[in-house]
Length: 126
Image 1 (cartoon, one colour):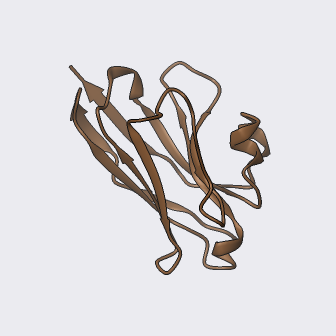
Image 2 (tube, one colour):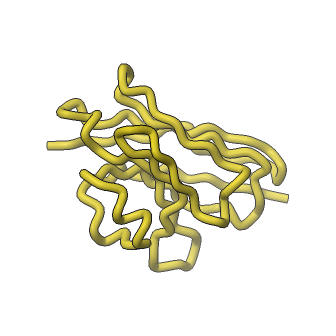
């Protein structure tokens, strides 16, 4: 059973920074595309915002490009999301996700993700 555990959420003022971490699956971690989705208040759908595949290929949603940086440390079985220049609209529950491929992010199809973390709240205030 793949288990993901996020950490690092919290409250920050607009313009500030936060770093999220996700401890990835112990089994065959390096075979998974890892990344992040978020679900904003009142929204039903989760937005794929960043993903990194097994060879280091990275994709970002336009909404976070240039402000967020995703990275992975395969030795520590962890993926990170560095979030800078945070905006009010970045307020959401952030979910770590793992899938054999990065299709769910590229196709904006959260329903097809195989494994989810429990989510961590990020709140940006003015």
